[in-house]
Image (cartoon, rainbow, N blue to C red; front, top):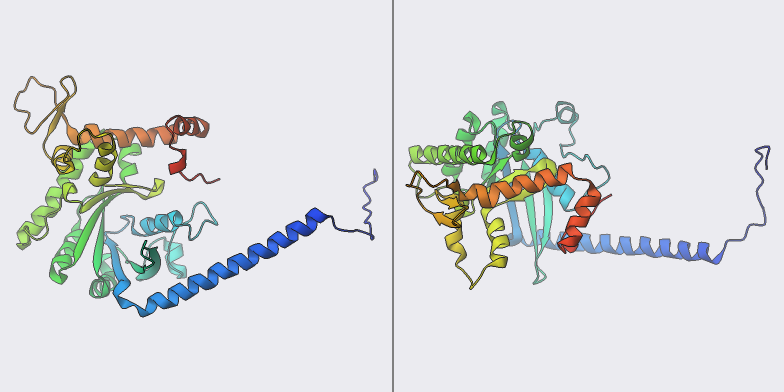
Length: 333
């Protein structure tokens, strides 16, 4: 009433809508329980099939973004969406306080193929401190493949050289990821031309280490060979040369050979905007040629990142709707 007293009706009879909502909640609980039982059944069944198990070691230098990379994978696969600022660090209390990995932390992912087969991927997050190299050593022995993360700003350090030596010693398949690409754009504010030169310098330094060890023919890293990727875990973005070529090949004419685009997009080839030409060597000093990798890969990436972070979400939504791209995106509140 007006005095603030509360009165309850003891003869309360629930409406039909209340009963319907109650039935829906019961059905949802049964549905979730059924899904969990099916998942556990597939999980225990896949554990018996060792041929579909793969152990992947995530290694790199100190603070090169290994745990943040795994946390972004967890976020994208919707394993944990309770907190938007979710960050994967082991259950140890000292790891949470220090915000760094001290022990090797495994985490499993399921991959369902079209032929009703399941693959179990065990990602092994390893510490990046040189005093904890025993954890990395044990991870090398049980892993099937290596993912090596290298900071774009710091580049190749002493621990990275040791890891490259171990990759060659254990004869493991390695995929290199250049992490923290967002810091190059927003903190250092390096233009795309300088970023491309910096990434090429890191790649050449890695190949020089392999050449010094005498394994240059076995392990030659180049973005055109799809053994190098580019990552920004903070903004959940990852791309390779192959991903950009697949986008450009959609508007391709007469089924142009995509293998030629690999050499044009990252090797020493120049794009002349006025004449729309791609030259392998820009010997003519009068031509103001730009690296083709800058024009077709890094510049679009810079524009997309700046557009998504500076524009209002409504403007981004209108742009995606205008380009008929809404079906390819997932919107999260």
